[in-house]
Structures are given as C-alpha cells and as structure tokens.
Image (cartoon, rainbow, N blue to C red; front, top):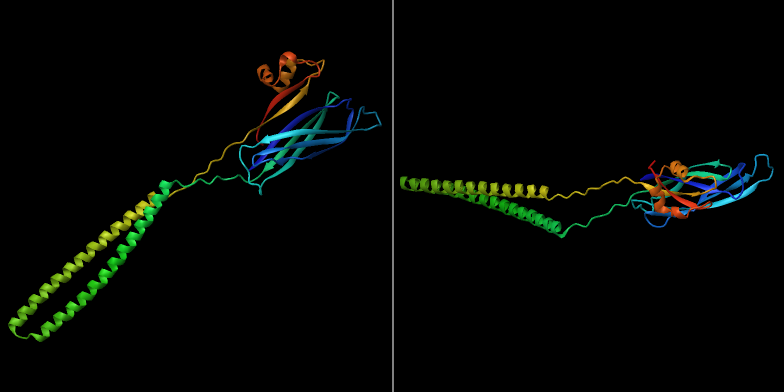
Length: 277
C-alpha cells in the first residue's frame, strides 16, 4: 500500500514577515500502533520583518499530526517520509505551509479459522480415499487368486484328458471341461463387475473432493483521510469570506466552533477533506 496524505497549516507570526530567508522541515512522525500515526511537523528558519531590513529573526513551530489509517500495516514493511513541502507568506503575517506525507507498507492479512464442519468434511474425504484404496487392494488380490485358480483348473483339464482315453471317460472329461469353463466365465464376470464397482467408488470420491475444495478471498478498500486548519480571526475579517475561502457551510463550521462567541483573535477550527494521491 502507498498513500500520500496532504497536510495544510497557517502559522501566525507575532511580527510582520517581510521575507523568509531560510526554512527547514523535520518531523517526529511514528506509528503508535499498526494503523495510527502521531507526531509533530517541526517548521524552523529565519526571516526579516521587512525586505529592506538587515536583521534576521529566528522562528520554530511544532505542528501536531494525528493520522488514522483504514488498514493495518505490517511492522517490518511500513515507513513514513516527507514527499513534498511548500510554503508561502500571506498578508505579511501568516506563513502557510503545505506538506505531503508519504505512508507506505504491506497490509496485514487476517487468517480466518476453518470452521469445525469443514474440518469434519475433510476427515470424511480422507476416510473415503482410504476406503477406495482398500477396495482396490482387495480387488487386485482377488484377481491374482482367480488367475491362480484358472491356471490350476487348466492343468487339471489337461491331466484328465491324458488319463482317460475311452469314450466314457472322454465324455466325462468333456463334461468336466464344460463345467470348469463355466466356472472360469463366472469368475471372469464377477471380476469385471467388481472392477466397475471400484471405478464407481473412485468417481464418487473425485466428485466429492472437487465439491469440498476451499478458496480464500481477499478484498481491497479505498482509503480517505481528514485533517483540520486553524484560522485566527482578525479585525478586517468577515465570517462569510472565511466560509467562502474554505468552501464550507456555516453549519459545518458551527459543528466544530461556537459561532456565538467568536471575536477578533479567536481560533476557528476548519475541517478539510484530503483526497488520495
């Protein structure tokens, strides 16, 4: 995840600002937990009260920041950095700063527990597989036994034919041969039937295994953040102009401020919605 969070602030100086001669930005931003960022933006530097002045004055302001992310980030993969910093002098008394904060990291993935019902279905599938294997082994053993019986019967027929040359014995031998032939055919039919039953059990197991497959799905969510501006009311200010400047309604401003008690020098908290970069 990569997110740019914009931060805008107006800093009121105690004296006039003729010229900013130097300025720097540092921060103490850090993760308080997996989804909350806190700390300060530290603006410092020097300025002249008038452009013609040769004297420089120092300044330093700490701007508190509190950011709540909508997704939790892995501790080893996350970072915070300043992506962009600009400033401007307004009305010779206000220093306006705009800071873009880069937040980057790997989102945590919640591992869902497998319900007990699914675990029981898995155990049933394993039992079916074991049953199919046992049926297959028994079928192979029976086939080998039938082959062995067939060889013994064949040897028996050959021995009977050689040891009984007269007609009666010949007829008896032929009858025995026919009976043994019927036994062989019967055994062959039984073996084929058992093979079909085995293939049916295997097909049923394969269908059940496919129906019991489990997949995990994951969802992404858009992220938005909010911050606030603080405006100091001066004598020449008009409340309607302030509302127009920040593109908010009187009701929205009144939600964060007591408009019945505002006066010159009052600090107005103004909500500002930040869009994803």
